[in-house]
Image (cartoon, rainbow, N blue to C red; front, side, top):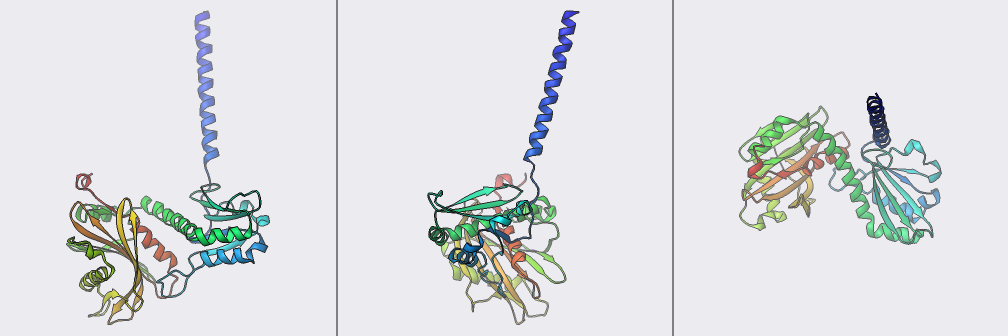
Length: 341
């Protein structure tokens, strides 16, 4: 009887302990759950005293965060800037998507940027800008201002891609993987309008806007093919062949009155030549911004270009352009051994 009673008591103790662990785990999980971010795409909340806002530090923040985006047909700011004083920064603002908090005083031994992810909401970026004085704050922004802008741009792209990856247009994804040997996070709402041997045109159309993703490939022979002038020539050759306008004899090409901006960087460990510029419709009146990424497919000895463009004559283009640009950042070349997986 004692053995049975002891077994029951031991069992009750284990069950109780198991229950407490479950409750504790649930409570811990609930504590780590955070609300979704608030605020419109491209908004930045800047928390700094009103006096600083009106002085050189505030002017520097305004210049950095509201600078015009290059190669948009009409001027649009990089971000929509919202200023809030520390006294008014309360829980109502804690869930905002992009927050910059300015902290100055002798307690800060050096000027620096402190990046925090998902502090009050998700997916959120909070950047503490710390400096001993106003003058060192301005110096910090002169040196690290572009890095601050890049971090917020990256956070915006990451949110877009996270959403797109949750709603992939599976048939297009599989076609790109099996036929073009690459993957892109193409979301639902896009359609494969042109599917040729070496060229694909994927489009999302509304009555007021058009967003396009172009993909073209060709044999790689020499690195000179990646020079800006040759990239433009190759681009124009493919566009004339495949991207035609609504009227016969019209086709897309590159606007050269304002030469495209050329930039080199590494994406997923691979070299990328980036061009940003304006496209125009030859023999027509349409136009808009474009961005292209060109890389080398070392497995197949070919050049791969993926490009995003926007046509929205009566609409703001900043977020439409950021969306197609984000898709390009998802580019991955598929190694031969993983194509069928």
